[in-house]
Length: 272
Image (tube, rainbow, N blue to C red; front, side):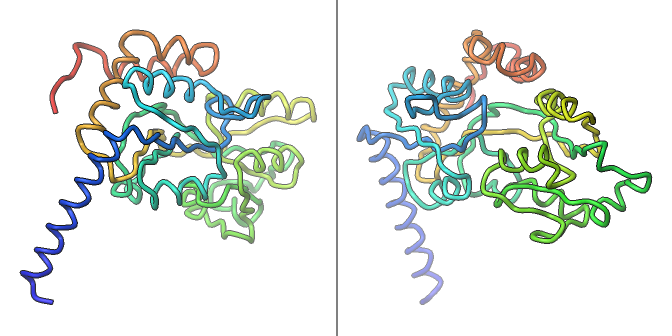
């Protein structure tokens, strides 16, 4: 195929993609919002419905935008595959990374926080340090997690010193059951781990920090730029007018809420 033919084919594909995106957005086909179990952001209530502070915020924005939605809670790997392979989907709360940048249209952040590698004090030794972690200890992280790379950089090898699970909550259970020594956890929600370990007669120990993590609502690429812009503006407005705070307070730490409010401090941004 000649260069001119390839360019023409690409142009036709782009036109078809843009047309399909516009058609989907105006047809009122429900947007599939996908997420995983991540209490208190998203979880199933007693009636089997997806609830949580972040879920409530997205429902509020969808109502404001007159956007029909269908929220589904799935294992993370399945949700991620669906969002990258099927149109009219969006995935939350999705950590933004260089590797994922081109896979989605990004709206957010929904939250920003710092992660740490934590250990159990009763499993630490005098020789425990950054260089010996993978030699002396086992860690846990769920499959397809963006944080796996951090543990691998510390020398942990999947299925050897690094236990792989389907859900993050399984790592928490294994950590509390002394089946693994280390876990990556959000610093703002470490108190519950600390309390659980205190009941076992030990302590939670910070080992090493991981870079700040920003979580987003990630849309499949068939959505138009104008559509993404409307969601972004609606989200930012909820930070300005206090609706996000109303839903997040008493659920997420004050530092999380203030950080989001600071991102949009000042007059509304109406530029493209």
